[in-house]
Image (cartoon, rainbow, N blue to C red; front, side, top):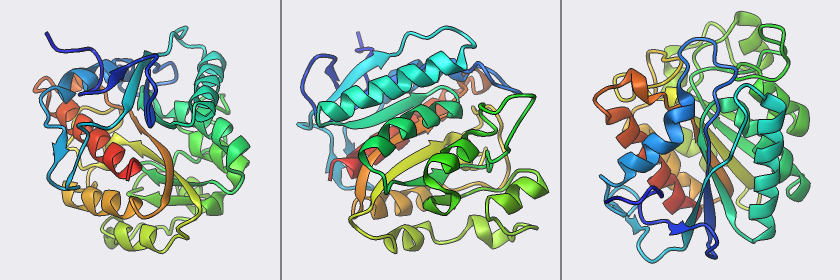
Length: 282
C-alpha cells in the first residue's frame, strides 16, 4: 500500500532539509472549487513517479525531505488559514528547513510570505501564474485568490515580484501589476530562464506556482484554466535556473483534480513538485 506522504518523503517528526505541508483550502474559489483536494491528489500521484528526474539530473533518494501532512483548517475561514500557514512556515524556518506548500487555493501564499519576510526582508517572489491576482478587492474582500499577489506586493513591493506566464486579468489590474496591455503573444514565451538567471545569486527567492500557468492541454484540472500557457520545456528551463539562486522555498497551488478524471493533471503536478524540490535542495 502506497504511503500517504509525497513520494519518498520522511514522516513528520524527522529532521529534514525541506518540509512539505498541504493546505486543503478553497474557501474563496469563485469558479471551479475543489482545490482543497489538491494536496492529497498530488501525494497519491507522486507514487507513479521515479525519485530521479531525468530533466534535472538529480535524485530525491537519500535526501531528507519530510512530509508534515495537511494543516487542519476550518472551511471558509481565510484568516485562520493564513495564520496557520504563517505559523507553520515559522516552525519550518526555525527548524532550519525550507518550506514546500501544496494547495489548495493560491491565497495561502500570503501566509508563507508573511513568515518569510521576517527572516528575509529583501525577499523576491517569482510568480508563475496565468492570472495577475493583483486586484485590490474582489467580491467585497481584500484577501482572496484574485488579490493574493496585491497583498504580497504590500509586503515586499510590486517590483520584487517576477511575473511569468500571466495572461489574464482586467486591463487596470494588469497595468497596475506592470504588465503591458494588450499582452504580446511572445510575452508568455519569454525566456524565463534568462530572466531568472539575471537575478542576484544571493537574493532570497520564493517561487509561487499556480498550476494554471501551464497550458490547459497539459493540466486541465485547475480552477481557472486559461489558453496559451507554459509548456513543460519552458517550466524545466525555469526550474534549472532556480538552482543557481538563493532558493528558499516554493508552493504549488490550485490543482483541482475532479476536473480531470484521467489523473494526468495530478501526475504533472507531482512532477512539478519533485523537480522544484530537486532544484531547492541543490
